[in-house]
Structures are given as structure tokens and as C-alpha cells.
Length: 200
Image (cartoon, rainbow, N blue to C red; front, side, top):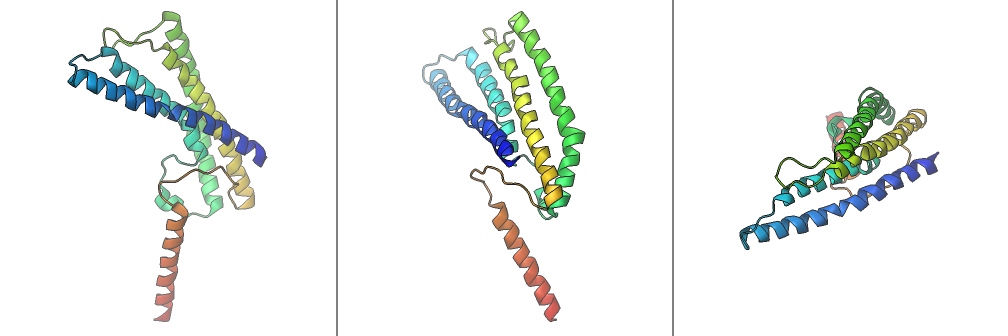
């Protein structure tokens, strides 16, 4: 089972890291537009549309990757101190109550949006020369399907954690904050306070 979980993690990582390169393209495009607009006095209408479309694709396609790394926002201040089985039970409940219905709705509605957009060859209406958006809308159900696949892997992880009392291994990347070190530090401070209170 662990092999399949890590395989799903790798799929999510592949798409997340591949689409992360859009940040480089966004940076170059915005820099070129700033130069064109302020130095050459020749702005391009289509750049604004294109940049928000690229950012939207990046944001959507990184969702499954972020979930695979346990990186979505949650109340870690309390959650991190719960026992593993309580964490897993809480996660499992939230996956079934909110995540699964929400992501299934995203895939279903996104498919409809994409089909309609392709049928009319939709273009952005924000600017007069707006670029096509039907390609962009195609990423909505694709990103939703990847997120759903990763969510199923996370549900399986919750079930394993409920049974074993330990979270199964997952692929890791660099973290902004060393959560484990912070947790050990808080635990050490708590132990020191209990020892001091016991000595009095």
C-alpha cells in the first residue's frame, strides 16, 4: 500500500514541479511588459490577461502537490499537539465532509465550464484583444482530478494512522519552517516547566 501512496505523491510532485516553472515565465513576461510599458511607452493589452491565466494554472496545478506534502493551511498551533489518532480522525472527517464533495463539484463544474468554453472558443473579455481562455478552463477538471487522486491517498493515510497510531511515510521537500524542531522545542519547554513546578 505504501508503494501506491508514494506513487501518487510522485505523480502530484511531477505536475506541481513542472507547472512551477510558470513562475519563471511569469517573471520574464511581467519584466518585459514593464520595460515595454515604461521605457518604450508601448504597453501590450494581452499581457495582463495572460499573466493572470498563467498564475491561475500554476495555482490549480500545484494543489495536489501541496496536499501531497501536507502543506495546505490548517490550525497547526493546536493540531500539531494532538495525538496521531486524533489528527487522523479529524482529517478523515474533514475529507469526507468538505474535501471530497468540494473537489467532486470542482471536477464536475470544471468539465462543464471547459466544454462550454471550447464550444464557443471563448476569449477573455477583460481587454479588447483578450487571449483565448478555453485552454485555461481545461485545467480546472484536470487539476481537480489530480487533487481528488491525492485526496484518496490522504484518506488511506488517515486510515493507516488510525489503525497503527503513526503516520505513514510521505515524500518530503524543503519546508519553510522546521515544524518537528519547533514541536520538540515546545515540548522541552513544557517538560522544564513541569519539572520546575514539581520541584517547588
